[in-house]
Length: 118
Image (cartoon, rainbow, N blue to C red; front, top):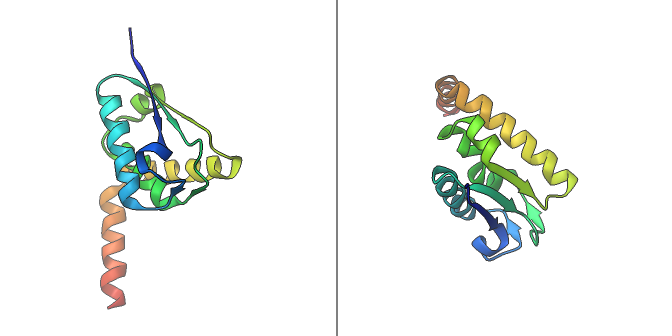
């Protein structure tokens, strides 16, 4: 029997604001641990009043760099997002999948752009 766990984002970050990378990392660590243990994870955004892409990139996007997409799809459920935040999450996930599928190309392009600007 597979165990289920609900992760309350507001409780983990002790705030209604999902805006910092540090807080996103706390959420990511909990999700990754639960999925790695074979749990079905529900991540609840109830009581979160503001979300930005930076937070979602760290909290959820980076899962695509260390776990198989199929595993994420089977074991992670998201609830409590407004329609706008759900759209933001979809963009974050698409960007993460593209980035991790072509990480070297993205990193090389960024490095070239960064070096070119100096």
